[in-house]
Amino acid sequence: MLSKKKVLIGGSRSIYDPRELIIAFKIVYHDGTFLKDRKEIGTVISGGARGVDKMGETFASRNAISLIICPANWQRESSRNSVSEADCGVLLWDGISHGTLMLIEEFTLQNKPFYVHYAVPTASYKNKDIEDFLKENKNA
Image (cartoon, rainbow, N blue to C red; front, side, top):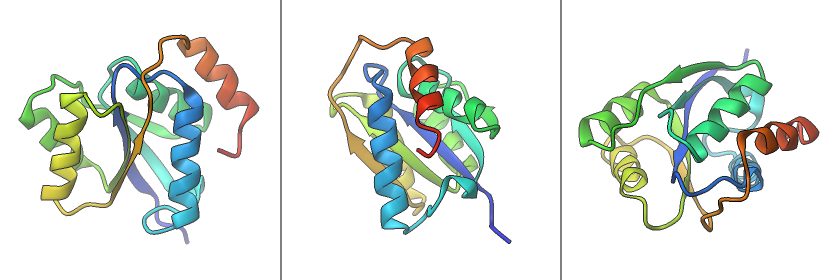
């Protein structure tokens, strides 16, 4: 039986391109170190912010995966609690976001597996675009 994991999907509020999340998951699945398939994901953890967090929420909704929102307040305790709740993480980072950097630090401190995908900030996608893209790419 497949063990279901709690996966924190988070990152920079400036990243809206759903293709970046798809790419990140394909890399994670191909590597297979901590996730081999979408079927292993039992829960998505999100900070509830715009950008990557919302993409994670849409991913959970479209794939009938349970969702936990741990509101991001960009404080160390918030990051610590979110990472404590997770088994692993998939993060998209613009290289600037301090909140994402705190998540990276917390995953490292808590010795939990995570992947950081570097992505260029975008502003041309809205949640509707993300939903349509994920609908068309169900295997991602």
